[in-house]
Length: 227
Image 1 (tube, rainbow, N blue to C red):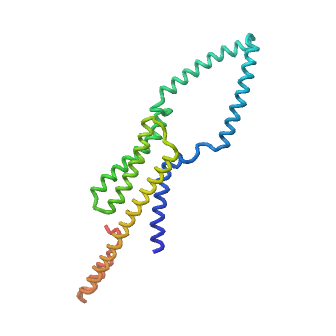
Image 2 (tube, rainbow, N blue to C red):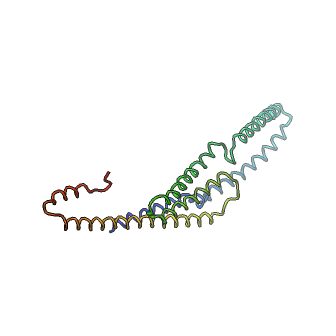
């Protein structure tokens, strides 16, 4: 009994972890406070350097060295503009390139196909934990559609609290679905066990003595996953 409970709740725990993993990165702060402080300090000192550099350039504006620098700067700016044009050309739907887009879109599309297939298949297979499977696959469909939409369209991102709430809802839904699936499996296994007990009891009570040897030979063949 204890092992069954551990088995059951470990599955529910893993389901919650998997559901939370989709949005946990949105809840965690993007950068630590120390990073922000260091960045602000850097920009402050950089601005001071830029001011001094501006004065330095102004003082030596007519020097041969400055003229050589300015000439090279023009060439460098042109090369940078060409680089920006190439970056813009290879960008795809707001991503740096098609490869990055596939990295964000591919897995969510795969999850969508998987969820949709299993959602439809739930209605085609025998009614085994249908309610739990429907909740599970609908939740996965919603998650996959969100990330597909995020990959295809630019829009204002949600507040972090929204992701937290969504993560809780999806985790709860998946936990409930796993619970229903495991409960149905337990009921079925228990039903099979009781049916087998009744069947074997009936056979033992109604088998003629001369056929008892054949009966035991048949019973020996009964095993799990017999093909």
